[in-house]
Image (cartoon, rainbow, N blue to C red; front, side):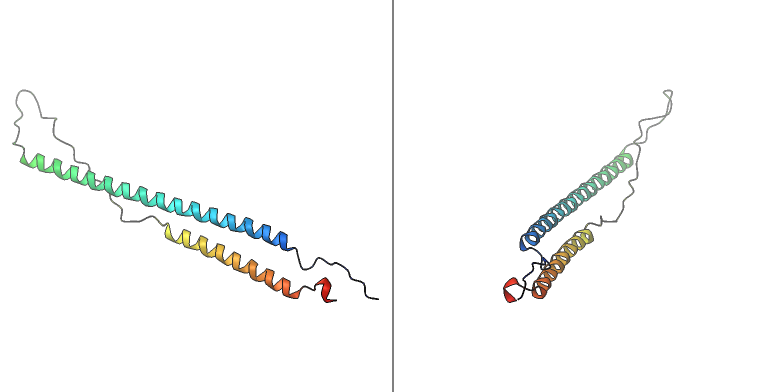
Length: 133
């Protein structure tokens, strides 16, 4: 007489689906936030570049105005203190590093999803059904 015993070694499909859905939602949320962070960094960089360009234009305009202004003689009133102050803006050519983070996150998520799917399929092939005995 053969006894049929339930061993639960094959796993539960419901548990697998729940875990897969949770991981997929986590992956979507992570990718969304990484994209938002990258877009914000690009906006901040664009604003910084525009600010630097405007400052450079103001500096050039101020320098031209100083060159074109007639020389002022200091008389009894004392030295002239109304001369414009020229401020040099240090520019950086470095761009924010946002691309690799996004690509790595997507690759890790896709790899995890593939690994867990392959593991599940392999475990289902190895499991013995109650009706096969």
